[in-house]
Length: 152
Image 1 (tube, helix red, strand yellow):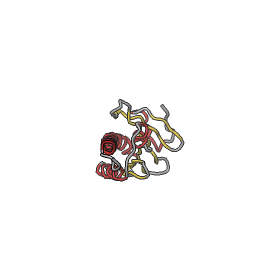
Image 2 (cartoon, helix red, strand yellow; image 1 turned 90 degrees about the horizontal axis):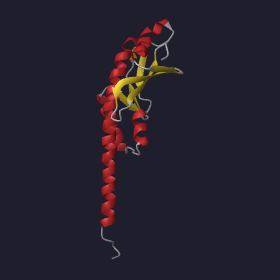
Image 3 (tube, one colour; image 1 turned 180 degrees about the vertical axis):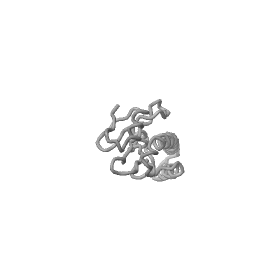
Image 4 (cartoon, helix red, strand yellow; image 1 turned 180 degrees about the horizontal axis):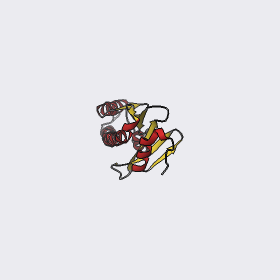
């Protein structure tokens, strides 16, 4: 566990004490207590703080990476559905990254928990959407193979 040494960031230091966290460049990578369906802990990235009085929390593309690792992809409609679900949960989906609104540094611990819970929900939805699309594709392939040939 890495300590943040600047006194201005005492709230972020507290965040690191509550959860396994590591400073990587200009961000803090936090392993939360929120469990994903796979049993893995939800990992978020906290950006900002320091000279700024605001922080944001993101999944660094984790939801879409999880889908890709499982062999799934989202169509444009599925991506749009994920974006709508993100907005309802207080997040934004931009270029494949779920990101929170800016929070005051003092709200960082709550922002991490809130974002991680929303990301877990959105990941489940993303898998449901991708599985539905995969079932539809499978049905189409079967119907195509079973259709009578026009050439007799």
